[in-house]
Length: 379
Image (cartoon, rainbow, N blue to C red; front, side, top):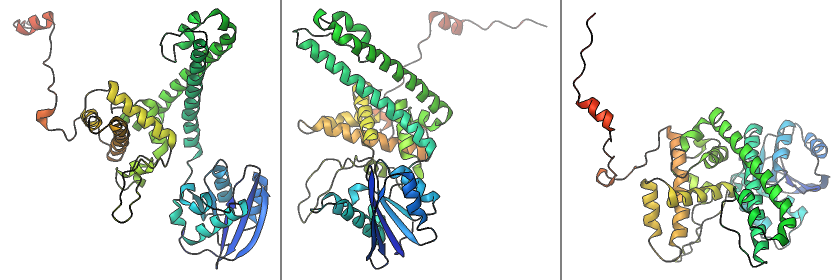
């Protein structure tokens, strides 16, 4: 992508069935507007009409942006901007929002300062396929949780309660506690839960194979307490290339875990995180932080998170979880960029580190150490 003003700037506002096209000349004057069907055939004809011309195409990230970007490249349009929607306030906050106006704003923004749109580059087909597998698992887990919650709510309406158990074991342990009046209604739900459990187990097996065969760095990342195969693989597929981050701390802002800023004059309020970037990856990191604080191995990260959660009022633990999630992301990127093992006690003085327990020998081993060595037989 070049920063020079192109001869033609195209803004393409992608709709589900139809899309708006706006074409500007080098002076920013509208030369044409049109409406095309959101199909590969229609877009291919549109892109071929600009073949050989110095154009810059600007679209917005969305459901159709991935395949449209690939199609445009195949048709010879190399100067292409896939804009981050958060960076186009003229669209999201416009008082006269129309599809035609959105296409014009995209063309004008891409023509002037495309780097200000935080251009997005979609992943390769291989990475996209592997990522879709992780996303399918997340959808199954959410569906499982919703079904379990619904069954528990139904049982409460009869004055009964189901005993606590994990979502994975729910379809095995809960049926015997269902009141007779609800057994007919809940039976098909338990069948669905059993099928979902089987599908999640199959995907988990596939994910372990992916980590072992294609993404060995994800296995290295699991050295960090609280980070399992799902979090590690999702992180690798989200980041894709660690070299595009100048420092490891940049990963916090990339994943939306950095605090928002709204400084003006002497006012600089403390705000929440930006929540930019991949929401699913952010959720997984927060879950990993919860796991580390609750039952993770003792390490510098856990001690830091616990110390932070003990400071301040009611929201101290919540802030600590988010901060620890950001620390986990930084630690994973540091391992990846530096190709170094995880140091659980990095930054902790030797005097504050736990001492290794003395080696415990069995009675037989102790006797063998005390006994004199038996001389070897002569040849």
